Image (cartoon, rainbow, N blue to C red; front, top):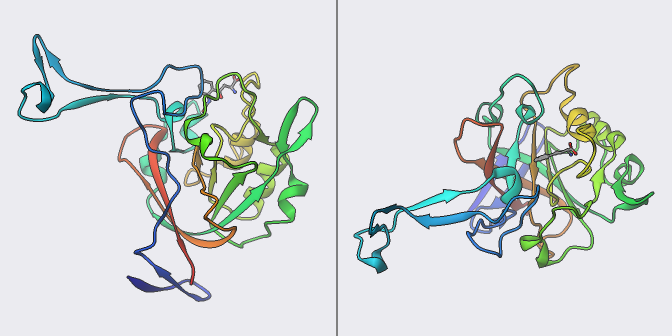
Length: 248
Ligand SMILES: N[C@@H](CC(=O)c1ccccc1NC=O)C(=O)O
């Protein structure tokens, strides 16, 4: 299913039958990743007295309730509404779903007790107006990321200067394989979130951050077409399904 896409300055060709899915599957069990000190998500049949909405229990349909948190339990896309006093819905922030994207892989640098991504590091991989979306794969990269329990681990994060640089490069959509672009315990500063959205000075209401992706090692660094889809939910964040297509 090969298609040619006309961008403003060039044409690209992609094969839509070869999707590279960056989302982590949400499962109602211990295999699911977790951040922010929550318990595991739940996927359980509706119950009414003795009736259990499960075909194997005699019901005519399987009819499950899902109980999960988009920020804590998997791949999600958020807008500035995540950090603002005013309400903004990601469903309104994201109105277009295909973007040019660049995938880069980085080993976070030591920074005191922390591991961080700095502006200097990013400057090797990203320059101005190269792509609309940036996908950051942190190294080392193993399949364990798809089920990691992140609470109290002080995961790597972006320095504020790095987030400013990403914004100044014209990146509208930032995707990363960590639970947050910010330090886990930062006394509520959320410096990278604020810098990326330029909040509150000149807020980029149509910019998004996607966290807890997983970029398989089969995917090479480079330029792609990104299809970023969310569930239509009126909330600051939604579970999401970013899919890359190799430019051929
Ligand atoms: N780093 C913040 C906390 C934070 O960002 C946070 C806390 C609970 C649930 C979600 C959070 N951020 C999420 O995306 C702090 O230490 O105050």
